[in-house]
Image 1: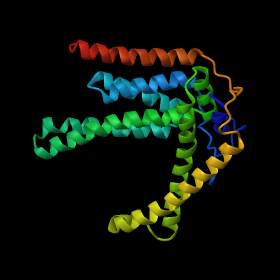
Image 2: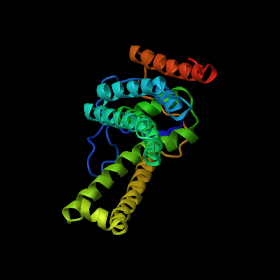
Image 3: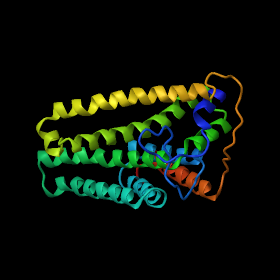
Image 4: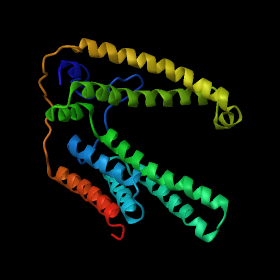
Length: 259
């Protein structure tokens, strides 16, 4: 990694995430796992949920994500995922109790809803608990090419701010009387009132990120000094073992259907 990535990574002390903040702070993670082990577990969860896995293994992956959300993010996030999975289980059992086309269609919808809920929740945990500086320090430690480091760092900086700006636009719409009933009655007009300000804010955010990156040395070819320490700790061993177990069980399930 060169100083090009340092332009986006080494931003100093974390700042509170507020309106217009360029560097939103990750959640106050309790586990503080190494980003490499966290990413490996994220990959394993997605392999399980988006593969041909069914039954107990998918629920095992959901349980892992539930624990991570409850311990490392917020109990509300874990309860939301639990509610989605419970609704998915109930709807999937509906065709057996009420054989009909509608029940089958709902079963297909909620089958994928549950899987995407697990995958997106795992991604939300990874993003919320991984500061950009630690992520890029970990990527530097494994000698990942700059062509991958810089886009990922920009993505991690841009997305939280863009989401924050979208939330602000929705709040402004509510203050002007564009409530949920208006969104249902006039969907196209509501989308226009939401998308145009968000696109304008996104362009401004991109310009600010570009200016900050240039000021901090974007394009310099010298290798930067990494000041963020990344260590393999006990929690990383647990996450790696969990990821290996999920992947191993998924492979065993595909090779040995009776497992």
